[in-house]
Image 1 (spheres, helix red, strand yellow):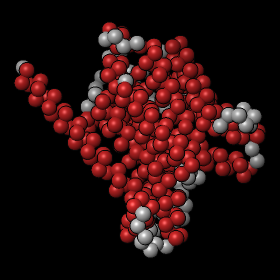
Image 2 (image 1 turned 180 degrees about the vertical axis):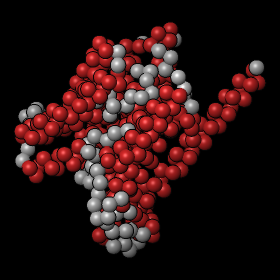
Image 3 (image 1 turned 90 degrees about the horizontal axis):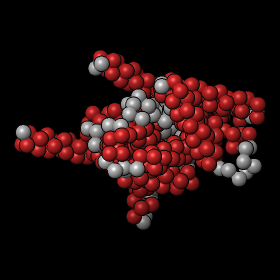
Image 4 (image 1 turned 90 degrees about the vertical axis):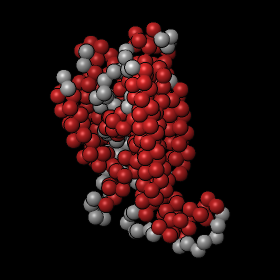
Length: 344
């Protein structure tokens, strides 16, 4: 019996390491592909020379326009896509563990919608009188939305339906604020942004996205053991000596912060926090010490690849990245529901 348990643990460890290494090895080629593809194709040689000049101080001759597009526009876009995908995937893992429901994520629970409404309130309506940034407004909106969803779910006992109701409410509030306060041109821009848009991000945004994603990931890993315990319920976590209320509050604040910052930059992007944790569990199991980093890597790869698709699906146009993630995520969500129904 002991030998069987050891063999199973060893097999799970090897599978986890393989899943992590595979995800990590895919990320860099995906980023390189992202900086090569666009309205004007950039060769791999130019990518290599530009990276070498910027990072190693070499003096290769490179077309200045190509180098500028690659470094200032496409690379910053890819980096923020990585941060956003990783943050949303980790947020999904945290919420699914805390709420013991594998069908929740920041988008379905209305956190993204609340963050969008908060960002719109600051950017369009002017709430905060210039004191609040878009990220701060998005954070407050995310907390407000999640609080309302939790309150409604306690009354109804239906967290998913409560999340859908909350999401629709805050989407409607965003639309109302845009209609009343924005001119036609600004309204078109903000509506396109709400669907998920990486076109306007630059390195200034990356210097906020990177630390938020890294800090959020670090905090989540610190509480990996607590998340393992929460998978079996709050009572099980408390019996192991985990301060349930404090840990839950910290992790909810971390989730809301990551979601709010990413939404304030790129708009509301759905299904990343739902689909990626399921795929990661399939690869590496349920231990959060490995599930969290693998989910982060897979989320980063998924969103960068979605951004690439958004640029090539329609010739001469860029689709909102939220449309691409929905086209992929909605069928995956349906399969998860079908699989869950068959396992009952």
